[in-house]
Amino acid sequence: MQAIRRTTLADVIGSATWTKDLILIGIASLATGLLAQAEIRLPFTPVPVTLQPLAVFLVGAALGSRRGALAMLAYLAEGALGLPFFAGGAAGPQHLMGPTGGYLAGFVAAAAVIGWFAERGWDRTPVRAFAAMLLGSVALFGCGLAQLSFFVGPQLAVQQGLVPFIAGDLLKMALAAALLPGVWKILERTGLAPRA
Image (cartoon, rainbow, N blue to C red; front, top):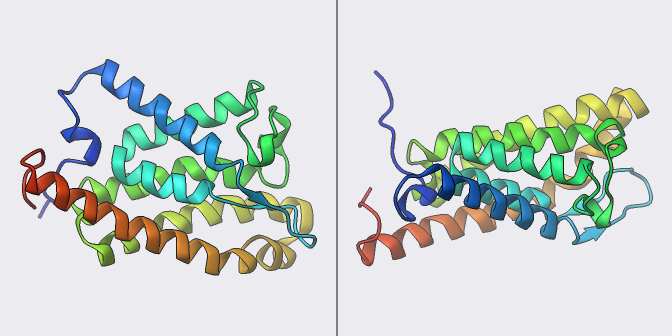
């Protein structure tokens, strides 16, 4: 049995046009770049703590799979082309090839995964939204750890690139998972979105 496709938050904003999609993708990529500036460097790992995952969670859920992935690709292109959009204002294509490049690529995969679940209504309740973001995080960390392991080895990759980030990312997921259903409820009450 095929899952019923539902709308995302982006679908209830105005009519469906490619211009609207481009604007939403642009805003989402800029927001990701902005949240990347909230950075804490840890002395034992090349991977910084940032608010980028929060942006990825929200962008994927709000825009859906295709637009969410395109927003993250736009973000990567902006940073690679020299805009100071990567963690701490970094820029340039070398960041895509360095120890944290896999996490950057993982943003695309995570937004696509989270967006796919959001298109099926998983962003309407906190528990399901959290589960969608957890699955998106598996994609994000899978890409990140794969590339990081080329620089530090598989065992250190887990110690330096996963373990220190679990608690913080769970907190970011919980925040996003609480926020999204609340936005849906407001839109449903005002008649701007169909009821689930």
